[in-house]
Amino acid sequence: MLDQPAPGPHPTHRMHTTTPIEESTRAEEQVAAAVLTGLRSLPRQLPPWLFYDEAGSRLFEEITELPEYYLTRTERGILAAHAGAMVERAADGMRLRIAELGAGSADKSRLLLKAAVERQGTAVYEPIDVSASALDAARERIEREIAGITVAPRVMDYTHGLELEAAGHDERRLVLYIGSSIGNFDPHEAAALLRRVRAGLKAGDGLLLGVDLVKDEAKLLAAYDDAAGVTARFNLNMLARLNRELGADFNPAAFRHRAVWNGMESRIEMHLESVCPQRVRVAALDFEVDFAEGETIHTENSYKYTAALAEQMIATAGFAVVGNWTDERRWFGVWLGRVE
Ligand code: AVJ
Image 1: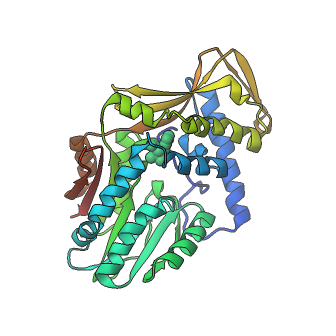
Image 2: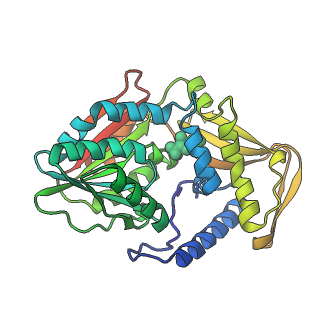
Image 3: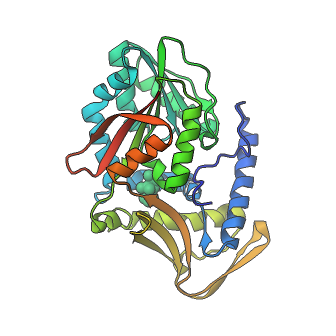
């Protein structure tokens, strides 16, 4: 389950638009099902997509600005320096249409959208997300901010693959998957996800993938256990969310945030550790779960790649690597893969 960080409210892949009521009902059912499965498993776990309710999304935005959280800043620097070259390489002489997995990371995508407009005057941007409301917000923002961009939101669960209208014969599609979101999947699942994405593309189309790289352990740990405690609040908010949405009675003060480096698996793990023996009831599920002192709930994996393993993943998914950009410390990598 941890390897499925972003299942949408849609139990199966569907492309119709949804009403807000349909969307929220399905989202509630997904939360209930995930919590029941995760708290029944041993070791206990909860999937990382549960972080992102309104409070959690705000906390994540705060994380991206922390001095210790180098990921967002570093990737933004790479895109700022090379967006023109990335767009040029992806387009390869054709017109480019830019899709993005997730409607989130707008301020980095903006650099690529602006580069596309500079290159070809106008461009279509297709953010892909399970949440119609997140897509509406993205459309409003981007169309207001970047002249020349037409936003064509696509409501779908990209973890199941892409079902996009065929691009024009003189057009190429570039799919953005930035922000190291791929790091939430184990390497096998990650390659499988990218393979499903590739199946929805045609020869010549591209994938721009942002990947966090292996580095000094202390730097990694600090990024996931910051001095101001924002990541701790982000992690603990998951329990507060279950209290709010499922009538659970977690005492957030009885759990503490733990970030650990698992070198064997090359991943940062986040856990919530029970500081005492306790029983928690989840009213909406009519379910109780006991925690021993020191027992943890595993809430996230964030895999870190070497350049060689990142390229292997991209190749396994069926893309040829045609571009790679990094920062001077080689802390983060952006790869361009092409369908051949
Ligand atoms: C959004 C998955 C890229 O793994 O770094 C940030 C989420 N978790 N701090 C990451 C996260 C803790 C983030 N990703």
